[in-house]
Length: 168
Image (cartoon, rainbow, N blue to C red; front, side, top):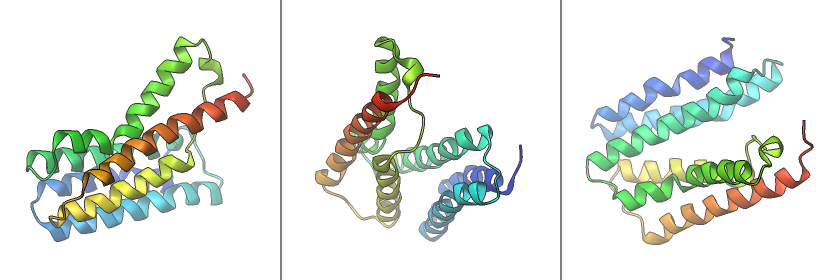
């Protein structure tokens, strides 16, 4: 189902390719547009009663594609170390661990698939760090430690939600 909100989500894919251009101002604009589209796509879907299964998966998928692509480019340019890049995606690593944990524990039917507070905070911090990296700001290990801590908080929050989830 192609809706305005899904189109806004899809727009983040070509925005990621702007990172192939070594122009910090174009990259800055790409991050701003990615943030704006990420902020309003879900809102528009709910307001227009156009929430769809496609949109539920498309929004986070295109967010991750944008961030991962940008991080890969910055890593290839030497603006980001491997450990820093891994820490910035630790939330997603913890999401995978949550999925594996639920399957191993035989509770996959109680698995919660929804956005959580710490996931949103992580996305916001990823965008802030991207802004800095675009313009050559270096961040201390504390910043990347915060990413890892937020990954753990996402895992914990999802576990708490899954305990309250009603099996389908």
